[in-house]
Length: 224
Image (tube, rainbow, N blue to C red; front, top):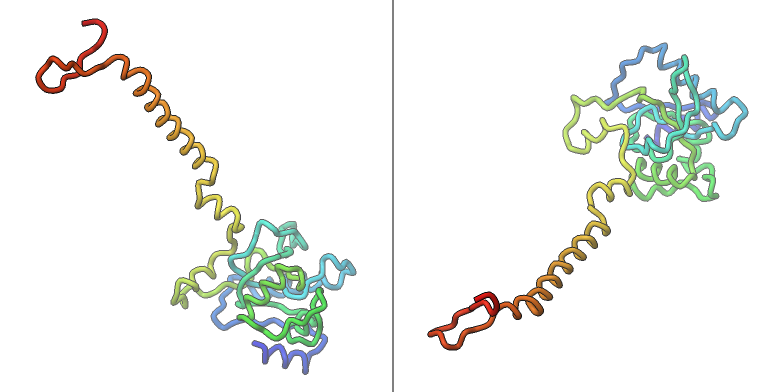
């Protein structure tokens, strides 16, 4: 993949580059693909920097869809959005600037270089996009998808899920939290204290041991 981007940098320095894995499928026609690609590219040429992107994910998975903001519509339907945590390298369009950032020929927004790549390329892109060092957009729905017929592992199945829950929501759903636990402890302690009070100040006054009866016998003090 890096080699393909290097070739693009050498032979087509001012052109957009689209890298698509051969395990990809699409339900879109060639005209629909062309129109959506041109729509995304137009965002970088409309003079509005806040709409610019350096990478446009034509396929992504396990994204933070709750953070999306609209960038462009086609026929009244939102098609391109700002993304902050996409995963996957299935199909990505690189602007000339984005391509050169990934190759280490240009600095990111924080002034650092993307290279050297210390983890997988997909994970490192996700990290820098999440930190705001690389601007990214994505298509909704995905323009291309991973071919499920080629799935071999559990990780391949994850590629079919567009979105994921924020980490804090997962923690809230998987744990009852501290408040219910404190209520449980308070109620338990209250029951124990009530039982102790009843035994110490009420039960002892109502019952005593009769020493005149063979063995030990509990009799009621009042009422015969």
